[in-house]
Image 1 (cartoon, rainbow, N blue to C red):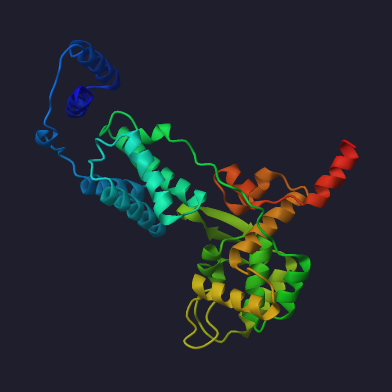
Image 2 (image 1 turned 180 degrees about the horizontal axis):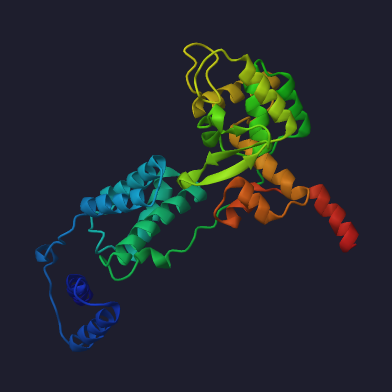
Length: 330
């Protein structure tokens, strides 16, 4: 009970004292109440002025200003609302134990992957770090919950044969141009569907895309892509400014789901497993590193903020590892 009283006093004094003064206040309270016996009726503790929902609203506004996408904002909001519904405690009074138990129960209840669970941990960390930075709490309780180790499986890439089979069996100039552009540029499918005709610089074989966080970056494509892209654009009769449109009238801009559905269908026809847009990006990263492209340049090419993210996309060819071992060690 004594610790709860001290925390309540600390919480109420937080807006008026700096960190050094708060630590001194904590020391004084512990010393002064050391031999004092306290019985506390927690039901009569003053309730925090700020509600969980109110703090969430402010946090979301801060993330919106930072430029987070609507998809990311939705993910943050959903994860935090689940926390509020499961742990009936004000976030201003939540401790590490509350959050550690919540993550443990969440993993048991949902049977989610370790990667998914670590994403939830990162969201909680971001939220409580914001509360700390904004002086709503003294210390982030997630700080003591370490990164969850994730099992890293070797992810598949497209073989040269699979790439050529997809090109040969494309039923339209559009699909062929999409495959070539994804394969040679390494752009995300979300970046691809937002491109317009005028964004393509055919002379220099490059274009500017808007990546995550509305960040611009140049991407490049090869000569084969240039030819197939021009053939596709020359065949169109519509006036839609979008680079890729539906095959049937009214020729609307192609959406992410449209690209995914078409590629999956092509994969089923050819018996190629797990055909999806992101696999082209992973294939490009793997081959670039395998052929000696510096990892920092691959990072810039893919538009990653952290180089660790780039390393997760790349899979070094094991045959080359064996050759290097024989050359340098054996």
